Amino acid sequence: MQQPSPPPPLIALLGAPHTGVAALAQALYQQITPGSVHITLHHPHLASPLPAQHTGADAVALTLLMGLDQPCPAEERAAQEALDTQLRAALAAAAVPYRVVYGAGEQRIRNALIAIQKIAPQAYSTSARAEWDTENAPRTTRLRAWNCEKCSDPTCEHRLFTALVEQRDTPSAPDVTPDRA
Image 1 (tube, rainbow, N blue to C red):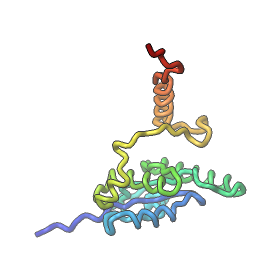
Image 2: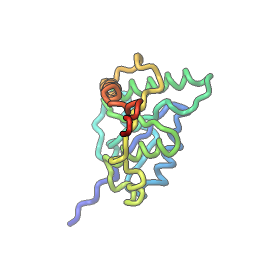
Image 3: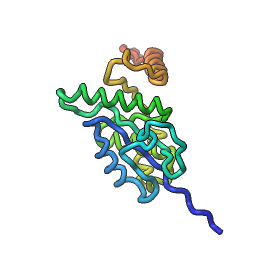
Image 4: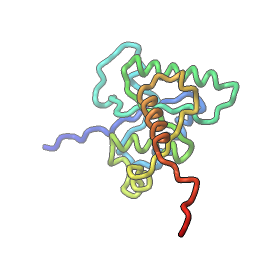
């Protein structure tokens, strides 16, 4: 007798207003294999005030939080940042691990797909996987778009420090060409 197949992994997409969370969900559904993952725009672990035992059916395999790098009207920026802070605090209080997704357009979709690939490699076809594969792609250093003194992420600090040391230690091309004899 065959056991029923496990439900597809549940992916929670969260984000403050003007972060493109709904657009990303729609774009992901166009890229992934139907039925391979389930995407929700809320997090069931954050819905109830009391900690509860979550069954396999509502266990979130991956939580993606939208970064604040998308355009936002100036008059709504403070509210956006406040809601983002509340989301991060709620995730931390519930001990929910999450990844922050940055980038515009195709880059944001690519970054989300890379995170999804880690938990559901069957989520998109081989041709799409090749298109989004970044394992062998050269990496460029990207500094954060906001003040680092407001961030206490040790991984980010280590990545920034390592990148700066690598830039300092990389020999530059000589400014003078050797004489030809």
